[in-house]
Amino acid sequence: MLSFENFSLSYGDSAPVLQDISLTIKEGECLLLTGESGSGKSSLIHAVNGLAYQYYNGKSRGKLLFQGEDLSSLPIYKIALRIATVFQNPKTHFFNINTTRELLFTMENMGLNREEMDRRMEALLSIFPIEKLLGRNIFALSGGEKQILALASAYLSGCPFLVLDEPSSNLDEGSIAVLKNMLHTLKEKGITILVAEHRLYYLMDIIDRVAFLEKGRLCKLFSREDFLALPEENIKAMGLRARTKPSLSLPEWKNEGALRYYKEEGFASFSLGKIYGIVGENGIGKSTFLRKLSGLEKEKGSHFSLYEKELSKKQRLALSAMVMQDVNQQLFGDSVEEEMELGRAGQATKEELLSALGLSALKDRHPMSLSGGQKQRLALAATLYQEAKLFFFDEPTSGMDQKNMLRIAGLLKSAIREDRIFFIVSHDYAFLQEVADEV
Image (cartoon, rainbow, N blue to C red):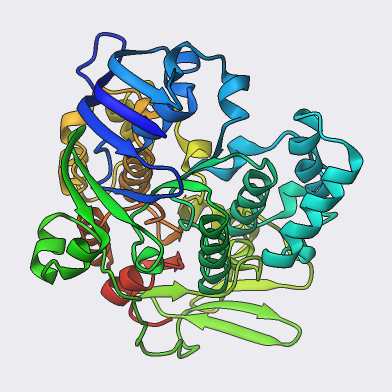
């Protein structure tokens, strides 16, 4: 159905990001594409959906054929009628403010009649319970809810081939279960699925094969059975996440300490020198909680104090540093090195932070040319470079491989001090288990 024949891809005069890929994806197959952050997974997906050539100005060598047609020569709209994509950053999907209109837009853009649109919406809601997302403002959705909406939109396209780039990165356990059921249903309907993922456990009974990329090359291709039979030490050596569902067994939050957040119904307290994990369902208010604590969002009837001295919104902002869920909103420099300089120097040197997060070799690159995981690590490094007391991390390991997840955990544990508090919102239980003191 789709075949790469000695396929290479490069951008500008840079070295190829994909090299000599030869791979055939069969009709109705589910292929898992995995590998460390920056290994070329997103570039391969962009080659399949046409963005590599017509948006990123990439140059290819070799062949990439879909049902016998050369994808590099097809206009985007023709590819989109055959291949639906769910991007790593769900915000890049949307064209409307209202969620229901966004779902309808996909089908209207394809020229479907009202009866067919109604039929597809009914089918969607029967397998993908998203009624609570309908009729809402997209800007008011959480990151995970946006991801679910993007998945629903891709399903409504009716395309025979579905490409997903880190679809579970912002999802809670319940939403991952919904995603898993959806992929099962799509596979039963004969839809071909190519999914790039670091979070592996929910896919283990869906996939047919696993393609492992390393530095832009297809290094290994496994059947599902062979991949499941690999010893755990091999999985770790490849930098991959666990194939089984992670659990969380940490002490519960003790509600004690020098930082206090008062409301009419009571107060919440946090101790300096600790790392707090914050968990909960998509849309429950985790990111909003961070914004209120940091002073980014005002709340009537609430008060904050540190060592019993009240903190104004302005004072909290001065004490705070944050890694946002969408790191594209906070990268402003023309290079990785310049991005670091935008922050106020802290205890660690710039070189130490970049090295600890595997970014030293990329310091001359433009931040927007990095992979999703590399951008995430850069935002983390730039944030830790600031001299702050309250640090807020919103899904800092979304779309992150095992090796870099452990890198981040180690760096945060080494960066916590007696005069700092780290707050981490995350659905990544394996990460929280490594790093958090209380949850």
